[in-house]
Image (tube, rainbow, N blue to C red):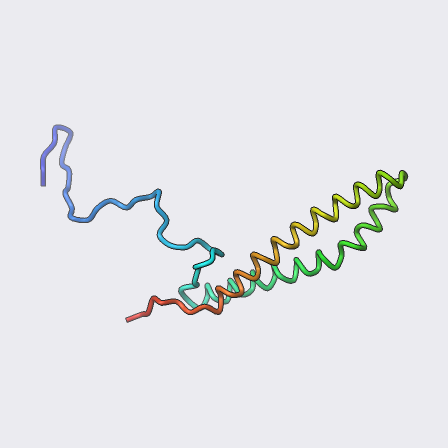
Length: 116
């Protein structure tokens, strides 16, 4: 123990944690592995919801395009607006499929950390 002019400062042998550095792979990253059964079940449910949402968005994009074209009076503007709206929906659907696939694969991966 070392005394300072403002009080007592404790010395320890452990270094302070580096808050800017990650402790491991983040949720959904390529190397992420759930550590317990609740994490595994949660990742499976969220991944399955993401994959099914992506598939439903892809399936519903054609109907969405038709309804959007019918609601806009000008055929040229209706085509352009519906085209770009469908492109946005398909991009979001592909991102959902990609993220859901990663979660589903990670939920079945086994952790290397073993309880002793």
